Amino acid sequence: MCRESIYNARNNFSSLIKLAEGGEPVELTRHDKPVAVLISWDQYEAIKPKKSFYERWLEIREKYADVLAEMEATGDNEGIPIPPDEYPDEAYYKKIDSIWSET
Image (cartoon, rainbow, N blue to C red; front, side, top):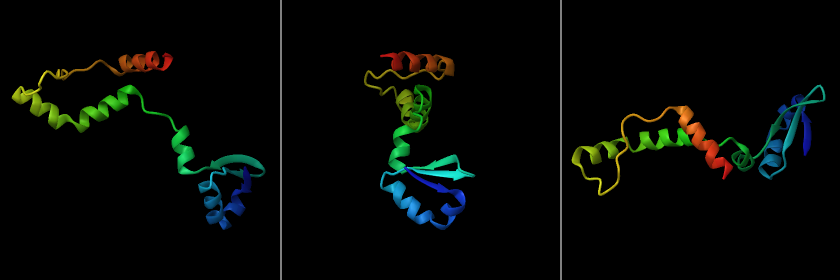
C-alpha cells in the first residue's frame, strides 16, 4: 500500500489515481496519521454496503409502478398476483434481510 501525505497528494494526485486504478490502495495521511484511503472503483464496489431487501423492493415497485397499475386496471395479470397498495413496514423487511443473511 502506498502512503502519501495529503499535502504531497495534491501535487501527485494523477499518479496516485493511476496507482489506485491499478489496484494498489493509497493511504492518505495528515501529520503521519492515516485519514483516508484512495481505492479503485472496482474495490469500492466490492466493499460498499449492499442495499437492503426493503430498499430494493421500493426501487422495483417505483420502477414498475405504471406496469403494475395497468395490469391491475385491465385485470391482465395472467396469474401474476398484484401486490396490495399497502406493504409491511421497514422493520418487517429488515427481519426478512436478517433471515436471508443467516442462510
